[in-house]
Length: 99
Image 1 (cartoon, rainbow, N blue to C red):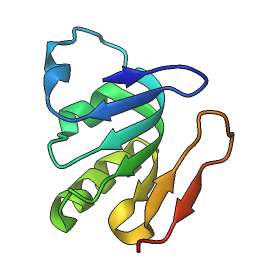
Image 2 (image 1 turned 90 degrees about the horizontal axis):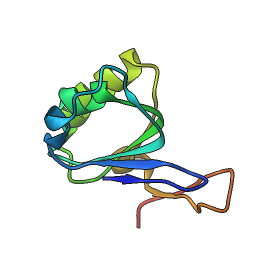
Image 3 (image 1 turned 135 degrees about the vertical axis):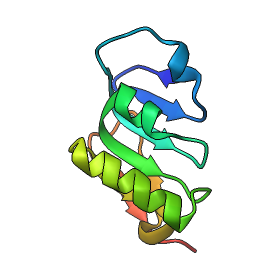
C-alpha cells in the first residue's frame, strides 16, 4: 500500500511487491514494516526512514535492520525505541517511549 501527499508512506505487509515489474526502487519517505515483510520488499522500496513495528520478532528485526542499513535507510525500531508519531503536516517526526 502506498499513501502519498506531502509525505509518501509505503506499508510493507506481504510479498505483493513481487507482482510489480519495476527495475527502479519505489521512492518513499516512510516505510512501515511488520512481521510479514521480506528482504524482497525492502529491496524494492527506497525509503528515507523505516519504522519496524512491534509485531516483528527480535531475530527478524535484526535481519531487517541489517538489510536496511546496507541500503542506508534510517531505522526506528518500535520494540527498542518506543512509539513513532508522524503528522503529515509536520516536518519533524516525534518518538515516544513505550508505555
